Image (cartoon, rainbow, N blue to C red; front, side, top):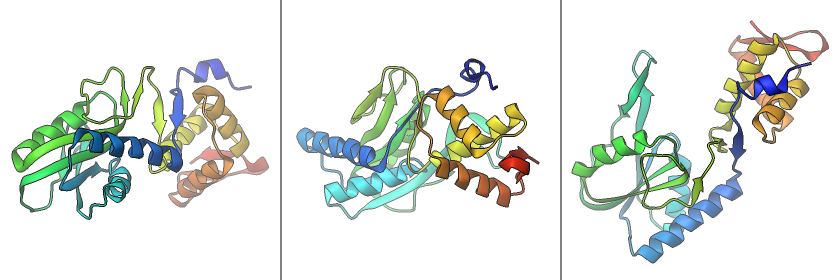
Length: 225
């Protein structure tokens, strides 16, 4: 029997947002924007987490102008950096007289958005920021943020849950030495206090199998290769 209490120290408690949840949060951002009188000329989605929110928000704003750039904590050799840096820069477009709204999904420590503002400020006319979820201890406070989490949780968004669950599933298989889909779901649900759908783990294992990372043995037990 897997020690769930021990696993709770390995896996973070989590909260998940559905597409409907995301749309409601973005509607709140839209209402705040209208109340503040700020009318952005261009919405910039910070890749990757801000891409889907930026697109939905432009619908509410009835705006046709959205662009992106990518910032991350990894270098060309995939090593992690302490400070986020530009991976792919903003397109060559003149935004010097434009009002900009920068959108991202979550602000954890806040360093990414700090660097985003530092990067964009000299390139645009005016800048404001929006994030869907901010951790209470984030060092960056966005201009528009409909959800502030007072207790730290891992956030599962629709656009990143597959990547997250893949990493968590790999960890389960490392710890257990092998598990069925049902066991993986149970371990993650009980240790992370969040609902996991079996179909999501099926997709994760298929992805890992195609990459040659796992194999399915007797009694439908999946193990790392």
